[in-house]
Length: 237
Image (cartoon, rainbow, N blue to C red; front, top):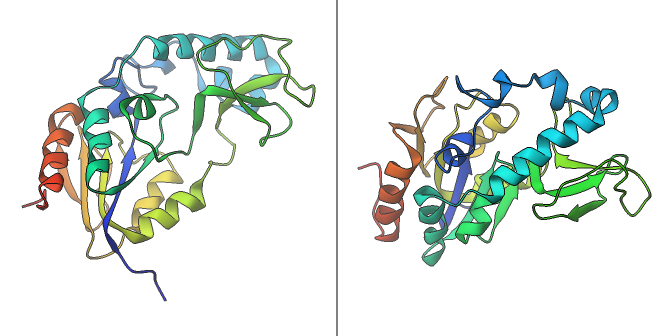
């Protein structure tokens, strides 16, 4: 038997488009990070084995950049939903802008830039804030620290937890993702018939069944949707 829908539960799935409006470059845009680095150089286990110093430099630079950015109106509007709803944020982003905006239930599926882990033990995770990771920095087990990031070819984090939350959500808001990254894009299929489901993005490859697509920037549309929901109204009417 399926668990009942919780009308007071909102699940928000966010992607790179939300962070981009805070000045954090995405990987796939025309001026994105992949123009300067290839996936094979900095985002695979093989890259780490071949040149860990380059990989550390890449993520150290990202960490410094994120430290200088601030949450935008979309992050703040999402956090504001907590005033009325049990709000779960599932994010593909590795930054901490949702937390800094005030969201207190954030599930990171692709890792967190402000954390590091042992290169041999995925459970040996430590918070490092915005500090660099250098060669020779070791975890508690004596192994080299690496970024707590899910690289291509590695298993997504917290997938089952995210899926269970979507199964009971009364409202689902998807923001700033093209839905081209799997398996996370498959999570949207778990949202229930009868839930209010909205996607806000500049573009998507394919709109999942049952979702209303609103083309626009996160900072422009999420505040509107948040206000409607906080007033007890549907945002898709």
